Image 1 (cartoon, rainbow, N blue to C red):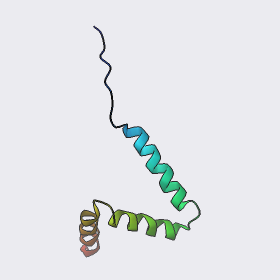
Image 2: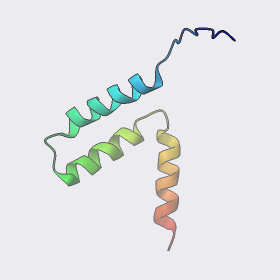
Image 3: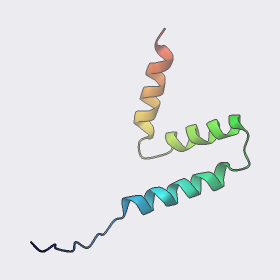
Length: 63
């Protein structure tokens, strides 16, 4: 059985690595509190920002 080579338009691992490197560069010299703020701000302004805000609000309303 021969294998067919598939051309990839998107490399998930490469994308993940670049995102991690970018995040590391952005938080490298921040305090832990500043890092938390960075990630919260990034999550809220991302394409999933509305979902993140709903989840955050639900968890803060739970007693």
